[in-house]
Image 1 (cartoon, rainbow, N blue to C red):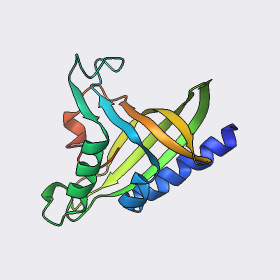
Image 2 (cartoon, rainbow, N blue to C red):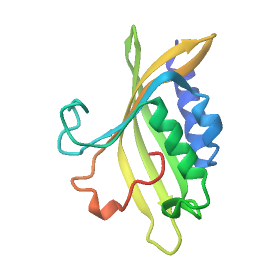
Image 3 (cartoon, helix red, strand yellow):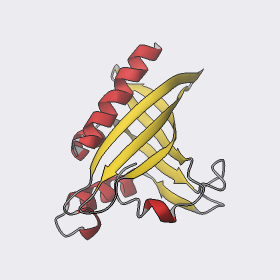
Image 4 (cartoon, rainbow, N blue to C red):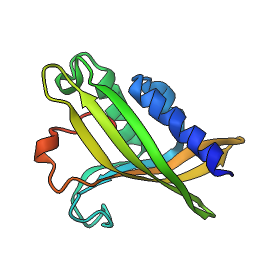
Length: 156
């Protein structure tokens, strides 16, 4: 697997999330995938022993997507507009394939000020039927506190 192939995959994921194509994004995940946003004061923690902003298994990821698509989900209706910038993509291990990348997510919502979420992603990627899939996805925020960022009601 080359860095360019991994970058293309991460850019595809970002485009799907920005376009709110959540079902297509779900198809990029393995059946046992996890999605986590650790607390910013202890990003290396284990979610079984520490408080996480988000610590979802596949059942919770699917439920999150269902809620986000529901018109009754006031936190995201009308939905936020986001623009993700991915950079510094690095393959940090090959077996299993572990990837890190920096990100900035700009969030535009109603009459609120633009919110900027800055940090790094950590992925474990697997080949499934010859295609890359996300087995684990962590978004580690650089912000010292989350209050100024507002609710993280969208997929970071």
